[in-house]
Image: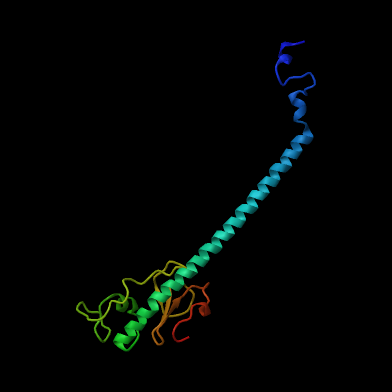
Length: 164
């Protein structure tokens, strides 16, 4: 008898290492690897989709907060000046001191109503536009004091405003 057979775990009936890696066993391992890869890809897609939905709802919530902050300030301007800010000078009239006529003056008694025009959470733009083109930024209507997102993904009925 050989000396290595006396070590624990060795016996004469043990198969050689080449027999353990038979072609049928290698094929089964390959199938397992493919299934594992498919499961990982599916899990990754589910996580990616849920994170996108989460960030979209977070932006929508932030949009509501911004609108709830800006719209009362537009109404405060209306109360002080008896008219809404002019469309062309909206940013200046809302962020600087003004006189009773709405002119931006250093020694104005009224305002400022906002520190800065907030970025639209849906697209990051601060631009205030005159038409509802869906080109981003904000839409402002000085006739009704309507201030809303000008993002094409936002439905107007979800964010009601004065004059709608």
